[in-house]
Structure formats: C-alpha cells, structure tokens
Length: 153
Image (cartoon, rainbow, N blue to C red; front, side, top):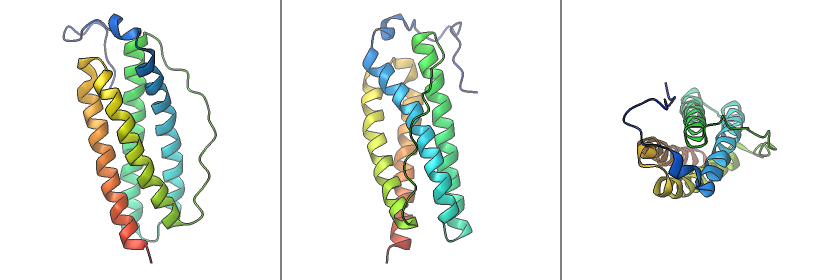
C-alpha cells in the first residue's frame, strides 16, 4: 500500500536526495521512534480506565504502525536499500496512566517538530506522505490533551 516503485513515472530520481544524510538519519530515527511509541501505547491501552479511552489510544497506535511503514518505504526509496532497524531500548513504562498520557502528548509534539524538519528537506514527491504523518501527530496530541484533561485530578 505504501510502497514506492522506482519505475513510477511521476517520481523524480532520488539520486539528489541520497546525499542528504541528515534527512535519511532522521527517517531512520523516526522508524525506531514510531516502533517505540507503538510499544509504549500498548502499555497505555492496558492502563486505560474505559473502553472508549482504549479505543482512542488503539487508533493512535495503529497510526504509528502506518507511519513506521511509510518511513520504511521512504527510506528505501531515498537510499535504494531497506532500513536496518536497531532494537533500541524501550521507553520505561509509565508510573501511572496520567503520567503516560503526559509523556505521550509531549512525544507527539516533539515528533511533529522533527517531522516538520524532514518535510522541509525531503524530496518533493514524498511531502504528501510527510504531511499525512505530521497531521496525524497533531491529531494525536489533541486526543492526548483530551485524555489528560479527562483523567487529571
């Protein structure tokens, strides 16, 4: 679904962008970050007090999976190679549900800032994907704000 074909006539040659090590490095980090977020959100789902809140976090987690696949495709397109993903240390589990929501909210906003940098430097034919990922991150921050307000005592 998110695979880019080198043969696609509407894509420009990625050769110019292969030299942009900063973008490629940020994409590599983003693949790992999206995976870490997914695992962290699995822990939040287990802590969520209602089915409605679990469903909200599940939808966010599922978006993170989609983003990881999109970043993997972008990396392959830009480098001609599949990314080698390091198994990093997982984020510590939240001390409480509210602490986890706060961590998730700040993480989504930080990711947005990083993705904006990628957006401004990436090949033009990949910007629509970056726009989709960025708008999802802002949507997630809004959901986490709602969850935080609902559960903060």
